[in-house]
Image (tube, rainbow, N blue to C red):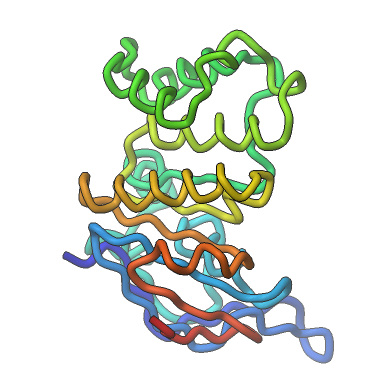
Length: 224
């Protein structure tokens, strides 16, 4: 079943002689139950691609559907609801709330989704998988970059979205932790029928993905 369908997506910044085309006629399709990698050098358009998939940026041209719903047909409120309920983000900047402990980051997910009680089974599964139980009573600024990244990944998994978009999720991790995270992503995609898109420049991670795309100069190509 198709999770994401992008057709002839362009993204342009600026005007006239200062115009920069970040994405050029992107066609892309992702099915539920897949782990997909998108690789490319810095400045290739990877992050712009991910932000358009997640509805954080509006394309200059083209259409995008998420789970058979067209972004163009939705109101701003409906797009926000779709992102809240169906899409999870793992960003390079972690996006942990600085004045909340790691435990409270999970409780915040419940408040945002208006589900007052924590799903204890899911909570314990993700903290065990990401090995963050010793970090739960700590604040983000007391953690290393790798620890913050694992906490951010765990929070995204706890929210249980159908689509997870990860921008350089292993950048702050050593090789062993990076491989463990990719194994978690792959197992999760296959066992729970989610689609997970990992944008990275780390070619070591290619062996974990079901499909691999290369993006360069704003153009995307399937290579695996």
